[in-house]
Image 1: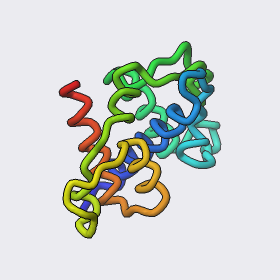
Image 2: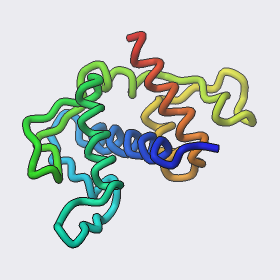
Image 3: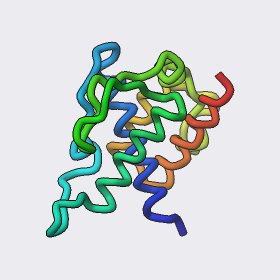
Length: 142
């Protein structure tokens, strides 16, 4: 059984990387609500735990070297966010997707970015988690 906050982290990571890749090399104002969905602040105007977790994912991706940004906009968005060079290279790497699709011909390859898109649209939380963990492991060795 998976922890829901970790599943959210993997999904937020994948969505964030795909959004930045789709705008690369142009900087993007990356809004938390575009990744996590609409926020439901409490009676004091504080953001939901889900919203804060997504924002924390953005910050973690920056700290881990996946993205750069100019400034934080009122804890709601990153201004001028872009992929790092290393993240761009990893996302453009060929990846053997036999682990995600056992029915695929042995040795079939695709770009990691395309697999992320595919898993976001049609994959399960488990297959998306496997792909994001693989991406992170691959990133460490580049």
